[in-house]
Amino acid sequence: MKNICIIIPQESVPAAIVDPRYMFSTINQFLAEAGKEPAFHIQLAGLTPQVMLNNGCFSVNTDVNYRNAAKPDLIIIPALSGSMKATIELNKEYLPWIREQYKSGAEVASLCLGAFLLASTGLLDGKECSTHWLFANEFRGMFPNVTLTDGSIITEADGLYSSGGASSYWNLLLWLIEKYTDRELAVRAAKFFAIDIDRKSQSPFIMFNGQKKHEDKPIKDAQEYIEQNVTDKISVDELADRFAIGARQFNRRFKKATNNTPAEYIQRVKIEAAKKQLENTRKNINEVMYEVGYTDVKSFRSVFKKLTGLSPNDYKHKYNKETGG
Image: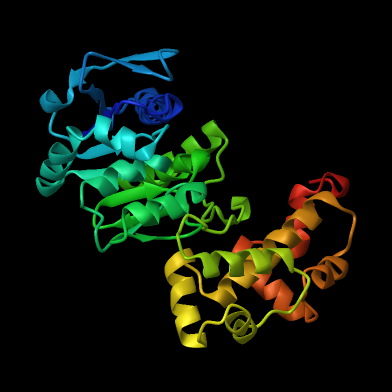
């Protein structure tokens, strides 16, 4: 039997505590119905006997103080809320314990923004990680030694697991169920909870919002110029000339400030504009393509699918009400 320890951080998201407990308990129920022994011993572990969440709207009664929890095979860090820096400070007591348990053989899984707490342990340094796409820039700023994988639903690195944004953690939970039991139980759980078991990417849900929390004004001006001239074909050399910066230095400063090369940034801005057109208008794919400055259908479709995980046509059908999305 695997010991599952779900820690209850201050400022954690209630659903991200309830859902994993429910998932692992449901597997035990499936096994009981088949006359088999449970696969999981599940404990809610906290700093205090009761943890108040959402400004006191919810309370969680823990099963045990985290220091007294049964030696965990898997530690689950739920999603966090509020200011990430402040929330990490509230929960810093967990950090040495998580490191100690990992070094003693426990695996650790973070759900959504729980990745911020996991990264704060230092265990992810030099490794890959997933988190909510909306917080990607903040995560990279706080943890430059961790490689954040854009768009990933699940990331695994040496027994450290993380999920993408919001409901993506259900896919990580299913993945862990399959790892610790078998595919049959994972499929049954997927059907019970109505989850697409093999969803691999959160790319279709990402809304690109260029990283502007930096102090390099010419680069910020360049970003705004790109965004205000989405229909134009803009070259990197043109941008460098316009803002009086050598091309090599411009590329370097742009990448440092935004975590994108200028060419990547131009692509992302154009595709984000195309997505909005596909979501909200009756324009066909070619009309949308021309309006965001593309003239080659093959190139547009290729870049669109690379950034969203869907073809333009599939994206339109998924999100445009007029087409039945």
